[in-house]
Image 1: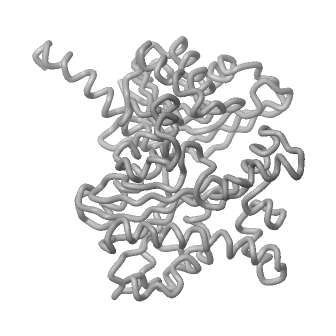
Image 2 (image 1 turned 90 degrees about the horizontal axis):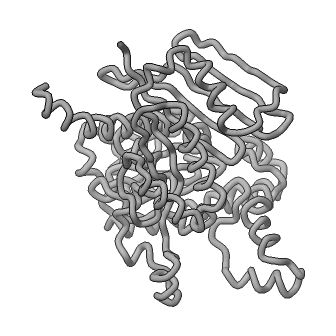
Length: 402
């Protein structure tokens, strides 16, 4: 009987899912999403990869995550073949440095990390709870923060009273770790070298954006911090700002903490600067609109600032820049602006290759390679879930003499 892994990314009002067949290489069979859970505008989008058929179900209220996952079960055709379920969990705190078989203790640890990710971890836990009732097989947590567990203390420590770290866990954690794990593996294949030999600077540029310095296959620094707000300018997030802006706004605009938090997370970034948050539209309008041009320049300036810092972190010994995420994969203009005038650092982009969005866009003589690699976090979760499943099954096989 063919075995498969179900990947679940449970949000506050959505469930993204994908089913992977466990052959020699994991291959996607179905993928889709349940949106608008708990509203009258619930919808399901379901795509069969093999037949390229899309199914869209609109306008039927899906009351909760249990109802949503039951709809997913109906679409899977053979749910009994699911031998493991991999769950994306945003925050693992300091406890988890790798994908982990979910037990009661693991769920308690995820719950303890809720204050660090109040919008995400409760939804992740709800997805786990419901899926455990529907799928009686091993469940695995794959943490966004796990890849960054190797960041050294000087990189993750803030210059604030030490007791805030000891008592509340206030430190840099970093996110998009599953994406960076996948990109490292793909870069290893592209460059024909073991992952543990590689020094990379990776760009996950999407609505949420971050960068990561990878030394000998391990994260040593990343732009997002205790929350995904820190770092690069994003679609609606400000990225790095002077923290004194908070009391300044409170004093001069009579804004409360909730209003300021909403301002920095939902009303800032590219959107706050020019009124658009789609980078494709920003790039197109930059020639005719001063606000859009400024937004584009601010966006790229922040990326280049982190690029310079990570070049120093890696002592100039960089094998490749890796662009990914919706913007990083699709915008030749952004890639060109980021790499402009960096020949002295060994970075030379071939604009003809870049315009064609090829996998390798560097010039033949470029000391540092420049790669464009589409990320696939769901596949990475499936692969890591498979590894945990195999580790659970190995003692059973040994005991039975298999």
